[in-house]
Image 1: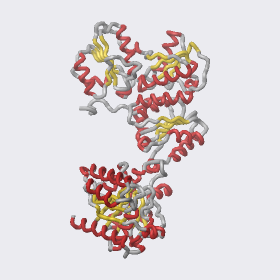
Image 2: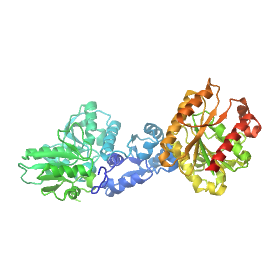
Image 3: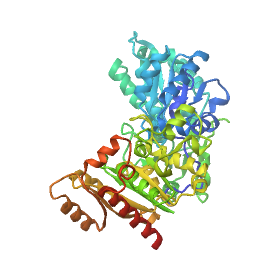
Image 4: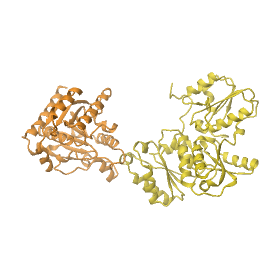
Amino acid sequence: MRGLRKYLTPFAPDQSGAVSVLFELGGIVVICDAGGCTGNVCGFDEPRWFEQKSAIFSAGLRDMDAILGRDDRLVAKLEDAAQKVDATFAAVIGTPVPAVIATDYLALKRMTERKINIPVLTVDTDGMELYDKGEEKAFLELFKTFAVRKYPVDEKRVGILGMTPQDVSDLAAADKIRDLFRQKQDMQAVCYCMGDGLEEVKKASSVSKNIVVSPAAIATAQYLEKIFGTPYEIAYPLVEELLPEMDYTNKKILVVHQQVIADSVCRELQNRGAESVQTAGWFMMKKELLKAGDIALRDEDDYIELVRSGDFDIIFADECMKQMTADFDGMFVNMRHFAVSGKLIGR
Amino acid sequence: MLKVAIYGKGGIGKSTVTSNLAAAFASMGKKVIQIGCDPKADSTINLLGGEPLRPVMNYMREEDEEPETLEDISREGFGGVLCIETGGPTPGLGCAGRGIIATFQLLEDLRLFETYKPDVVLYDVLGDVVCGGFAAPIREGYAEKVLIVTSGEKMALYAANNISSAVRNFEDRSYARIFGIVLNHRNVENETEKVQAFAKEAGIPIVGEIPRSDEIIRWEDQGKTVIEGDSESEISRRFFDLAEMLLKAEEEE
């Protein structure tokens, strides 16, 4: 039955993705909601909430704020917060309520910037899309706002775009990627938004190239290429650690993950002799990576049917999906995807 | 309890028709409530001697709390008609439709009907059924009959047609039914024929006809309905006739 979920929990909405991008950057992040969306971010969608400090606020909208469109109150609250929190910027993240009453984010930005002496960025998420769409908007807004100055290019520096727990499912991923680049290529990897802070975003023009690790960051990589001429590649540097050592020769394999990781795993498996690799995903499928035969999953039935008809030897997917096809008699390799299961690698 | 919602194109005379009907019912000894559901909040002004009433939304905005009593948000006007205005946000901001819904919830919380025990409730609604909030007055439990005010002007008839379609679309939701058209004359050429043709096409009876008259404007300039100003006049008689027709239909039901 279309839309019915028996196994998977609802995926994080776009506002959660937007917050995830901004979480580590030292700003005041105001979710423009009554409280529920903020509760979801802090309770479920942002695993760093339990380990790191971040100034996440709910606008605390009430019925009359929505009815009367009291933007001025939100501005006053932001002004108050800016006096109490040492923040480098403020961000207003949209949710369904402001979407329904057509809140003017540009006006909010201008009104707030007149009151507080830090940059304000707004993300017009509406809660109707999934986390990756919110990330895509927030990445773009972030780099458009802060990556404005042209620095000399340092050939030893590489930017990693698209890092969020939702996408890489590993809170140690930034350290691992930094180590990998240092050891293998003697390069410094800058892990934007997960590991490295706002100062690195401001110096984005200084990296020799960007590596895009999630589809939500492709648009930003293209923007940085257009503005600063920074080239980009789309690949997940830690792909090797996702594949257990075994013989993949002549195997039919299904890979389900976010598009960049699925694509990187696919290529790695092909290099290791797999007969065929079918990639599929629950989230955005960008044309830059889309191959003939890639499958966008919408409902659980899509996945169940794919497994039943695919005659696969191995499935790479989050373990929470294993129960959906209990009769699958091949090998199931757990490849964590926080956005699907809410679980992290190694936790 | 007779509960009627009055719809029609903006500026067509909905508030004039509603407040004159309210005054007519009151003059007939009925206990009447008129609820203005337009953000402009001027529905009841001619029942109140030209003095505007503080709308519910203004109360909430200025006091920053919900009113505790009906007296906070209502005032009795001509003939004891209890006047209430929902009001709305600053034009261009917020959600006026949600404002109507919130006001209705508040009136329920304040037990308006149980406390005041009206015989007649009139809802004067904004020009068109633009969203769920503006359909709230015709939801089950609120108005049961709809009057559509129109002239023979093309845009007024166009709006009337939209309203009639919207109300018909709500039939399976047990919303209010259209009672009829009130023809408010604007001296348009062949006006009666045009409205009759529309009424025939739409299958809606013309239940009231208000002739073009300076009398209405004259009394409104003094903050009064025609009923209050001259209850014996020809215009007043038209409103009394419509009021009687509505009451009779209610009794028959």
